[in-house]
Length: 421
Image 1 (cartoon, rainbow, N blue to C red):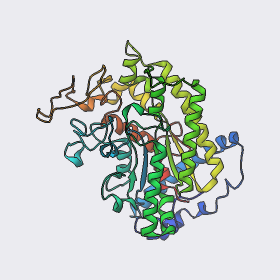
Image 2 (cartoon, rainbow, N blue to C red):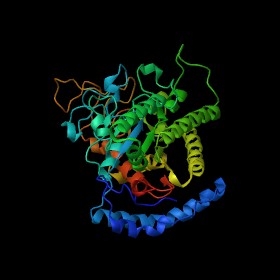
Image 3 (cartoon, rainbow, N blue to C red):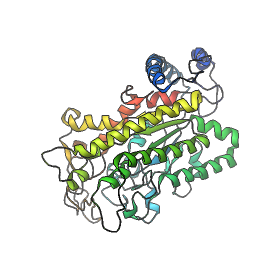
Image 4 (tube, one colour):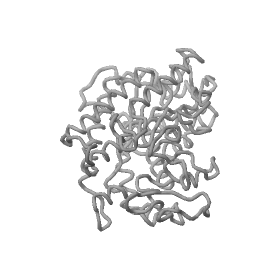
């Protein structure tokens, strides 16, 4: 397998710290993955190997950070409204978060909307902060974002988008995953023009590529049929296979372009979000079990693919499966233990259609022209009918960052960040 320091690119400035190399020298000669095991053997070996490695990695990360050799954090973010930071502000779409009270708790903007579909930071924002990012990656469509591309990364995510091109059609404009990958190609071309192919590849192999996508594809599949817009549905199994196969194509394309560290986020328990509970007439504080079973089946298939990709691409690539479903389910079931008072209703926008979260600019900051805006946003799991609050995002981010193999597999995100090929 690879190692947890780079002989050529250990920190943002490119400095080489001899003690880093000495500390992990034994990893340089590792040959555990020089053969091609079966998928079943891979699962057994990865649990044993990374259980041991996790202790080593924790010590190395502490040692390197303590002595000042901190890795820069570069990330390229793909996905939907869970991680969109403003791309939809630049396109004609019904899926926007460019008006108050969105962003009310986002300190860098002074509480003004930034295009994030929550009251504060997204999960990717929070993870970046924990890993030492000095600023948040700008949206790809923002003007003058090129200077940030090389070391900070870029955010390509788009609200209402999905793995499949047709997902989100009712919202008109959106940037499907296929187009997001093409936009990354444009960013890569810029990097090569400025830094050259070799340095670009060095940056990309140490950057984290995260994909948080699939929720809208599921919602499109399970929502009630709309005349003239609904095609004949595929069977659930065929539809999930179609999703996974398309996502796999995009992952392989990113790898071809130089990506080596991937975080592939599973779909959360959509059967518990206010929108799905309302349109499926779920009562008695329950979630839609039918929807959640569908998502569990998708996540199982996705996890299998992540394992297969790790086998296929070998020791110089790492795909991490992030189990957001388990993390978010724990929050909903045990919400009071996490300090929440409400895990069913949204803080903003009301519990029934049309789920509008909006505040008149002329009104007091704590008043909303929609049906409801909660007083204490830190006590609600859901910000609106679709998205978590910043308080919930913080918990999810921490779990994905430092969780065990039941949450992030084969290693967690902090270990992925420290990992060097």
